[in-house]
Length: 133
Image (cartoon, rainbow, N blue to C red; front, side, top):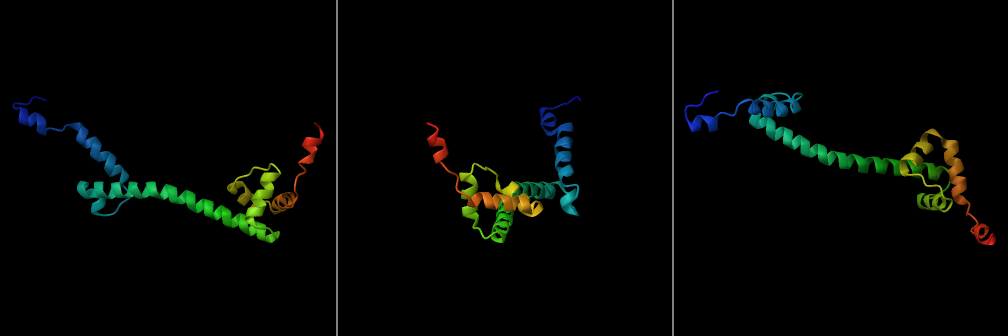
């Protein structure tokens, strides 16, 4: 490409502009109307959507944690336990399971969860370790 003046060289953006716009248009391919076709509107819509997606990932984690807690609470109520005492009992018995696993056990493995509830009610003997000395 030959440019007769410096101004034409500065104004020519070449193939880079096409690919830059194409990247944005691909992100907006599922939009309807002008947010899909008009670049100035598309870029605003895509940036807003990306910002919401970033916030949404954090909110999804919070929502899932809340759901797991509710499920474990429901399982504990079936066995007459409080969630905090259940977690404390499991910790004292060296059973380190997170909320997700406990929630899955409460829903899909009720007998296993019942066994965990019984274990959490038992207090381990710390005397066994000290008597061997």
